[in-house]
Amino acid sequence: MASPRPLYVVIGAVVIIIVILAALYAGGLLRPQASVQYLGSPSGYEAFVPNGQTVNYNGQTDPVGDLILNNGTTLHDVIWDGQYASTIINSHNQIVQLNSQFVGQTDPVNNQPYVPLQDLYVIKGQVPVEQATINGQTYYVIEANKINPADIAGFYTYDKWVSNFVAAMNTPGTYAAGLPGNSPVFQWTNTTGTVAYQTLLYQHYIRGFFGRYVLVPPKEIIVPYGVNTNIAGSSFNNYIFVNQSYPSS
Image (cartoon, rainbow, N blue to C red):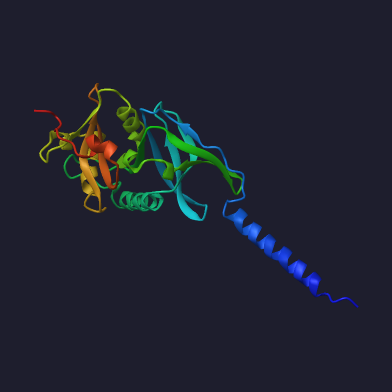
């Protein structure tokens, strides 16, 4: 009677191969590679806006949100994968925590209620994106490791003005300015005055956050904002290290 050992060896080898193939597939090495497309303008600014959700993609926890293109088009269900993913998650969580603490309270300078602020991550130039399906949901995936770190920077502003912020950055003639401590803007009894002061308030609670800045488009409808220096690419130095005040003297 023939020994069954060779059969066991063959079965064992097949099992090992199956396990190896399954591991490679799970790691994405055997999956069909989605083609990368580049969205936006080579000379424009695009922004990723996290919404607080996360997904596991390629073994990493990544933030989910919207992608606002330079022309104002907004894509939903977008994953930021690669460099700065954990920094974005952490920064967004801190913004949400401060919103829960302060929104509804009163700005002591202009006596108006505080409003929710939102963090956003601006990319200079086109954004490398591919599509992926996770648990039946189709996402756009930003391939952040394909972006030069110098072309990424974090900011925060009033959540309803995020699109205004991106539009202002893409408007020729827009410049960034700082608000001196005695700026009359802080006393304006409107949302602009509130957000200007609130960006300054939040910097005392989140390491690397600095407020008291404004974008000044040609029509002078200013957009107050703060900077997240934990993600501060050199392409954005004009928005991070401002050398003029508003209003100009």
